[in-house]
Every structure is written in structure tokens, then in C-alpha cells.
Length: 97
Image (cartoon, rainbow, N blue to C red; front, side, top):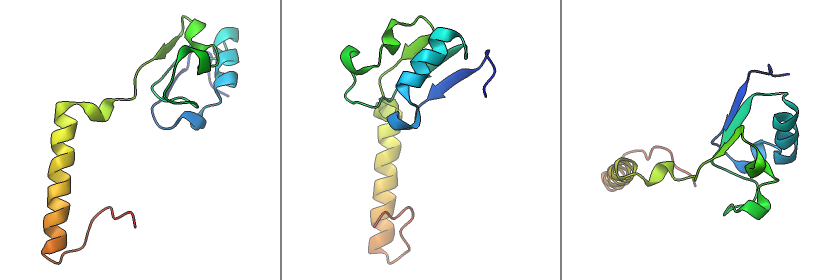
């Protein structure tokens, strides 16, 4: 249902996109190009990329956006703030359990 000029970018989870279908869509020109930093099998390697690495209109990048110095500083600040709030008796934001 996408235009043939569409560019698909998956930066969420590997199983959001069926890699076999993506390969066919790119090879047949149903969409223009795609990029992903997540894959169905991780850690990713050439053997498990469903031949996407063979295509000129596909870009694979490592899933390391949270590994920058700036991101790590922000993560630490958020963790410290959450701990301070907990020990001060305040509600914890983004609580998982």
C-alpha cells in the first residue's frame, strides 16, 4: 500500500518488519529503499540478514543510538533523579514493575 517512492526506516524492533517481504519489495521496486538498525536475528551478521545486504537500496546500521556520550549522560541523570524521587517519597515516573 506504500508508494513506490517510499522509504521505510525501522529503528524499533526487528520483528516489526518481515525481512523476507522487505527484500522482495525492494528487489521488485515496490518501495524505493529502506534502512534498519534492528533485525529479526541479533546480533546481526550477513548470514541472518535475509539477503538484504545484497541490495543497493538497503542500508544497515548498528543499533547503538543510546551509546553516545550525550545519551549516556542523560540516562545517568534520569536514573539519579528517579532514585532521589524514590528516597524522597515521590512518585516514580516510567515505573516498569
